[in-house]
Structure formats: C-alpha cells, structure tokens
Image (tube, rainbow, N blue to C red; front, side, top):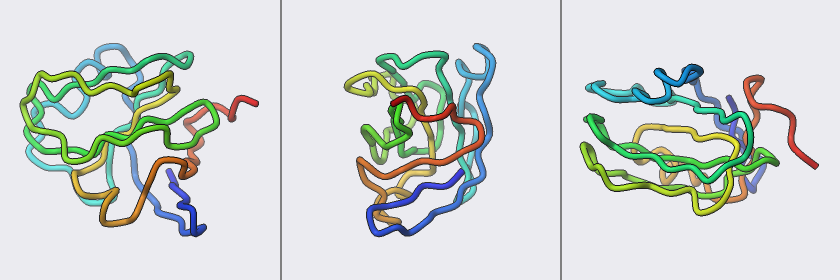
Amino acid sequence: MTITDHKKQDYLFTVELAKTPREQEIGEMFRKEIPAHHGMLFIWPAAQESAMWMKNTYVPLDIIFIDEQNRIHAIEEHTIPLSEGIISSHGPVRAVLELPAGTTESMGIVVGDHVVSSALPSPVK
C-alpha cells in the first residue's frame, strides 16, 4: 500500500488485510507490537459510517479512515490502548487503515492524501 502526500511524496506500507468478519472483529487485538511501516487494512463492502475501538489492543495506533475516492477522510492519532471508547470516521468511508501510533505525524500524512492499494476498489466518481 502507498500513501501519497500533498507534496507527491510516497510512503510504502506492508498491510495485512482483515477480510472476514472474525478478522475484522479481532483486528490488532492482543498484539504486543506492530513493526514500523506495517499495518492492517479493513475494507467495507460499501461506504459506511465506521466505528472502531481499542478493546484488547495493547499498542497505540493511528487510525486512518479512507473515503470512496481513496483519499484520507479522517485520522485519529495516538489512540489509547485498551480503551472501549468509540473512534468514529465522522462520515462514510470505504476502508480503515491502522498503523503504529506516531506514523502519520512523523511522515506528515494528513486528510486529503491519496491511498493506493491493489486491495482497494477503484475510486468512485
């Protein structure tokens, strides 16, 4: 997966796909670490309001919400491990990407940046 920022800088990530409902339910739970430049991608069948949480997730994450144009719609940085608070996409999104906390800040990734992955459907026009 690649995220291209507003300066046309590309950032490459290795992502695990959470495909099944069970994989999506578990997500990054119970992991003690997530390597740099690695993450997990959740893809929904259609754009929807998305709500995530950190239940049983021991490492802080940056959660990136991706819209139907494969652009970053919202980012929740430095989520709180083990929290059951709801983290909302604040609007319909097609996918969610979880990365180690601090990734978006250190790379300068922001709302509006473009996401490319063979796993993502083509952008909706």
